[in-house]
Image 1 (tube, rainbow, N blue to C red):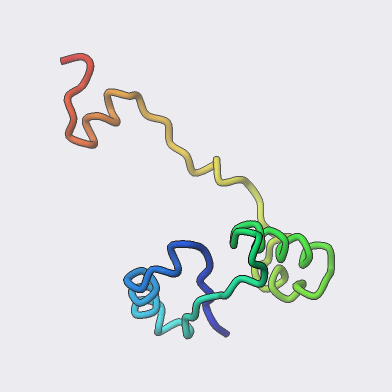
Image 2: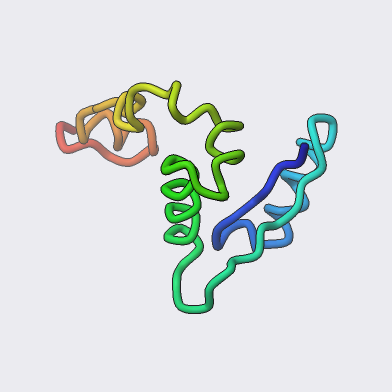
Length: 97
């Protein structure tokens, strides 16, 4: 098992090393190199997931992630607050005083 980091932020040494240090007890961490020069890493990741879900060569990845068992959306974790509450949390003056 290993933990693969992908994306622009994963190329930052401080982020990559920090994650490697924190996750070392779980599995080795390494950066994932893109396979195309004209597509962004996010698009490459989407292609890998689509291939895996379609039963292609990357099926082991999607099976390991248990994507077919997943439910909900990223929007399920959004919390809506008022602009004044957001300003208060950021320590900024509110519109109401």
